[in-house]
Image 1 (cartoon, one colour):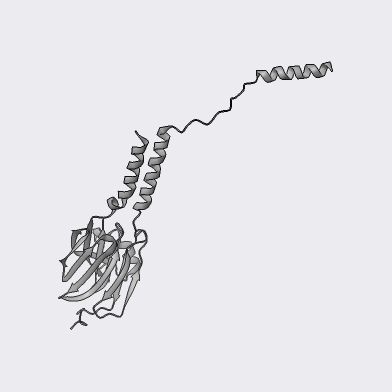
Image 2 (cartoon, one colour):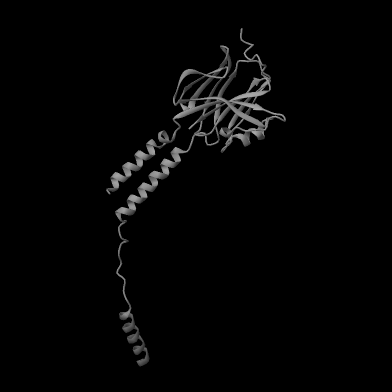
Length: 99
Length: 138
């Protein structure tokens, strides 16, 4: 029993010597971090909104050829490549269909 | 700085960013495409699009014959490029283009142009090649 008592006495003694951390709330987010977060979010939204609508190139919404031709080839642009609309076999006197 | 002010500034930036980055000038170039032994020269002003043109078209020479520029949104007033009368009207994302030759309609189209994303309307006849009109908002 003596050894048992000594053990626990020493245990309690050592436990008293250990540093104790008080329970606490995390520190409030500093205003500068909050502002930085808002600014970064704003810039991110701005960059997303500012992406060109035609990121894949110019988009042809309508096309009407008034001259004689045998067809039209549309090559959709992407990245740096231009969008190309090529009218096939238009005669030199184009517009001859019109009166 | 007051976080509220920063938040407001960020929101304003987001709201006006698209307008600030949209092109404000439309350039229109009449380009002649040629092929054959005497061809093969590419106008320096077309350096950016030349690889795509050479890859997709049966021509090796490209030169700017005439060019013009106008503010965006385009006012619809006619401009002459060579023998062609070009009318552009409207905003960059809804640009109405009319090409006429000798008062005859050749092509009428509506396109949505991206910034610095050229749109090329080609196949217009030329004696020893073909003509194309390149539109670019910047």
